Length: 220
Image 1: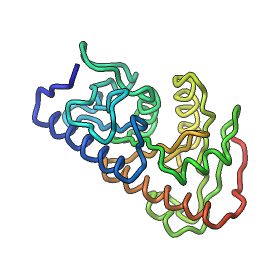
Image 2: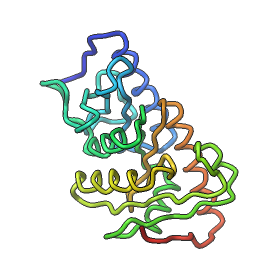
Image 3: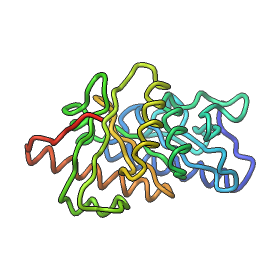
Image 4: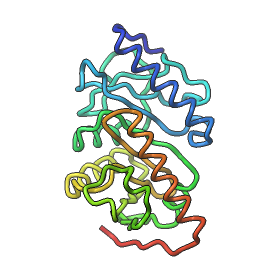
């Protein structure tokens, strides 16, 4: 089934998701059917639209999204397509941070860093400091931060539980996270802000890879 928004706001939100998804695909950050984007409905913040599971991101349209509950991640309407496999992670971010948009992609440099520093059974904390681009993350102290890298459990709900617990404990942390061997997730007050933060973190990861410096990592 495809999504048929009943309001102009729903249609506009779905189109924003489709447009940005194709843009990120063209940058090589959402190859094949990988990655997922979501955004709260402006007229109903308890619900969000998220890209449907298994859709080719280079051909995504405004009808290839699913309406979900932002508290639970469960489908809010019957007869829809299956939501993204990582919907519960989006819901965890929405519940804890109050974000209005979430982006998860497999951008190459962030994924390389997630592969290098991620652990199989514990959250790794990657220290980022001195980079000018940290100012783009909206941090209280942009001089330094710790970017969490979560284990990529086969059970996505377990990842979501880890994310919710960590974000609750580290409320002043950056608006982003890595998944070991997997990719990066960012969020913000708008889809554009989430995208800008994604670009900042991906660029910082690129600089880390190109500098060939040893990442400073601790365990949470």
